[in-house]
Image 1 (cartoon, rainbow, N blue to C red):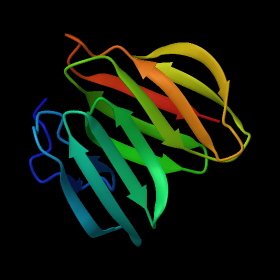
Image 2 (image 1 turned 90 degrees about the horizontal axis):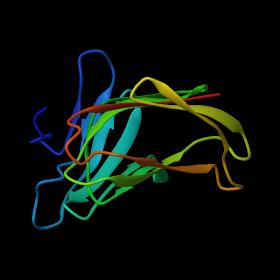
Image 3 (image 1 turned 60 degrees about the vertical axis):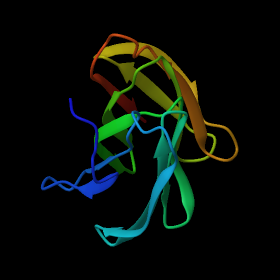
Amino acid sequence: MAVVEQLLRGEENGSLSFGNHTLETKSKVEDFQHGGDIYKVKTYKDITKLEKNGMFAYESVPGTSVIGYTEDENGVSFVVEGNEDAQITVGLQDETEYEVYIAGESVGKMTTNLGGKLSLSVELAGAGEVQVKVIQ
């Protein structure tokens, strides 16, 4: 999978692709309009952050490249790539239970905190692309 050279782009299927885990220096794109929402991304090798309408949506440490990011009332889905294993946090509904799937395998149910954040670890080192789905 290639990194997202534009840092943030809308895909024909309505999803988003963002982040570039190979950058040595911080880069960002602000005021990106997609699907009636405004997005902002900050990314480089150490961190990738996505905001939607000024609110937290996604963060990874270290930085990642994300392809096909979609979200709806039931959760989020995306393909992620990075050079190292990553801690990924996604913004969802407050205090809600979700089933988490990584690379097609259920890793169990997790509940978001009061702020709606859910954190998970994804083994990326040498793995290439990894599909992540978080479903209510």
